[in-house]
Length: 301
Ligand SMILES: *[C@@H]1O[C@H](CO)[C@@H](O)[C@H](O)[C@H]1NC(C)=O
Ligand SMILES: *[C@@H]1O[C@H](CO)[C@@H](O)[C@H](O)[C@H]1NC(C)=O
Ligand SMILES: *[C@@H]1O[C@H](CO)[C@@H](O)[C@H](O)[C@H]1NC(C)=O
Ligand SMILES: *[C@@H]1O[C@H](CO)[C@@H](O)[C@H](O)[C@H]1NC(C)=O
Ligand SMILES: *[C@@H]1O[C@H](CO)[C@@H](O)[C@H](O)[C@H]1NC(C)=O
Ligand SMILES: *[C@@H]1O[C@H](CO)[C@@H](O)[C@H](O)[C@H]1NC(C)=O
Image (cartoon, rainbow, N blue to C red):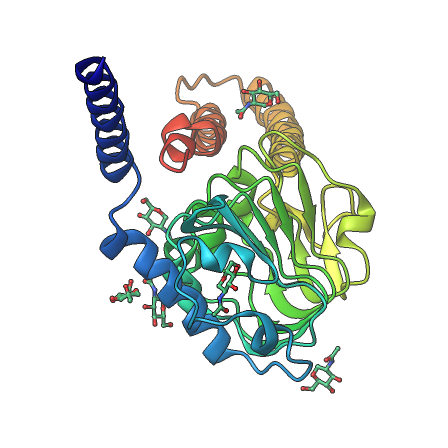
């Protein structure tokens, strides 16, 4: 009897040992990954002004029970007993400061909501290195300025990107069109100009682009001088228009040429216009090829 109980206990102990060993291997060891997530939140707390004490009152780093940061206001963890941040939801807390780059030490974060605060300055150029696995990024209703970084196109897991109600300026990087998983996108109420991106696998409404001084193309009104727009359809249209004009000129030229030839009754086998025609066709093919080359897209996926 005693031996049997002993055996059961031994087995149980072994089971625990194995599962803890696995946990230790699969998740990160206490000193490597969860420590950086704690450093991440410490850094964010230190870098933001918190006039209403949302973080001051909740983010207490002195209580070191396992998974303690998971009970902080606005912090979701992958597992409630593991200090590994999944989402940060810090909306509408009156937070002031710049984009908290310390977030880069929350290495497994997938959701970042900093909307409706008083954040200023640029969205970092290396945003895709800071939050590479982000699926949802909401920076709306702040005071972010400067351009929309091209690097956002490298956050390839993005489903939701909300940048509306800021003071972002310049053009929307056309590379954002390569975001294959994007479902929601808004840049309304900024200071943006130029053509809207054409997305591979989604289209957005005028509302998502509204109240900017100069967004054009796509669902918006056509861009002025739209032959320079990077929209493929527009380029194709312009090319066809150009070819039509060229054909007309060639036709008229040939009409007069042959009339002159038949008048002076002299033959000539060279056809410089025909050569030009072939060259212009080749040029159009070149444009199309560069826009449909799949390696350009594969590079980003
Ligand atoms: C935070 O991240 C930076 C850069 O990735 C790294 O150098 C630093 O060691 C990290 N801090 C901690 C506490 O892990
Ligand atoms: C530490 O956190 C645990 C869990 O939230 C709580 O039960 C405990 O009272 C806290 N201890 C201190 C000293 O704050
Ligand atoms: C991003 O750039 C900032 C400076 O602009 C730098 O402090 C930070 O370490 C960079 N992060 C990464 C992950 O490259
Ligand atoms: C944004 O910043 C400008 C000037 O820096 C300021 O006048 C304005 O009130 C700010 N807007 C918001 C919503 O904080
Ligand atoms: C995006 O990723 C590609 C490939 O990893 C890299 O070459 C490029 O520099 C990145 N772009 C930005 C703006 O980070
Ligand atoms: C476009 O979306 C559909 C359905 O959501 C998906 O099956 C398809 O793979 C996507 N195409 C690309 C190029 O991402």
